Length: 107
Picture 1 (cartoon, rainbow, N blue to C red):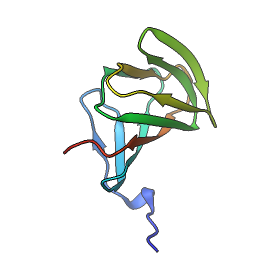
Picture 2: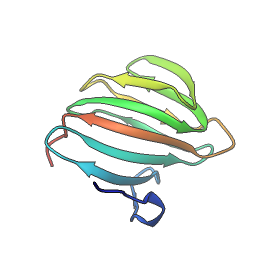
Picture 3: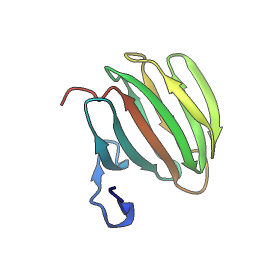
């Protein structure tokens, strides 16, 4: 068994200033926790694998392709590979996401 305390885990920041913590990677999946601050945006980008997002906390909007939808805590969203997707935090609190990439993308 492995227990990971994310409060003690190192973070990274992408080019949009979004904080991330990559806490699992195998050939089958990559799992990352993202935190998008109020008013911030994670710009549209593509991934070479399918992605499932789970909203841990907060509220915002997701765009997948041309479709934009509001999301909030406890919603899960599927995003197919190679379709542009991005996020906007429209709430007053951080938007926290669990990002599950299936399978893990090439490094």
